[in-house]
Length: 163
Picture 1 (cartoon, one colour):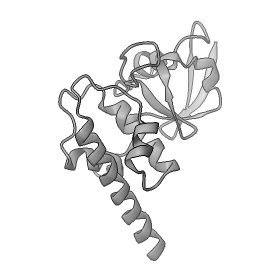
Picture 2 (cartoon, one colour; picture 1 turned 60 degrees about the horizontal axis):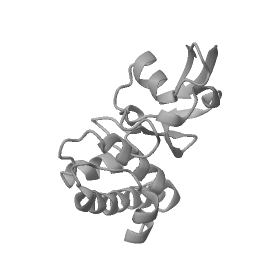
Picture 3 (tube, helix red, strand yellow; picture 1 turned 180 degrees about the horizontal axis):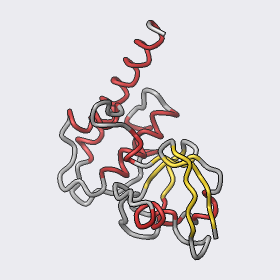
Picture 4 (cartoon, one colour; picture 1 turned 90 degrees about the vertical axis):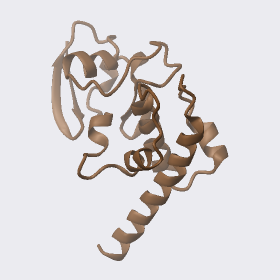
């Protein structure tokens, strides 16, 4: 079965044996984009979070057949080392990761949150960032989420002033 979609801004067609194959395995094993992690396989932990048409989706339980024609963004497409996304920059500034395994999923969930709520409160964060971190870096992540909002909002303000 052939499935076509855009991933990280590039058109992609993949051949899969079964349309019910989780998108996570297509991303990691076929496209070799290994920043998206496998955690639980049950959409509970969020390590596999990526964006589909701008929404945070847990790719371990998302059948690849539903990706047809969609725009997918993985952690590799969020920013670059030269121009990191505000979330990536904030994660660096606040030294968020301990082991780091779950962090791509948290960053993708945060980027989706900031696209919907530009200046989230602690309650917004609690209600929207439901990923799990075994190292319990939640306090640093909360600080980084607020910092990412500051960076994004100052970048947006600067772009509005200098189009």
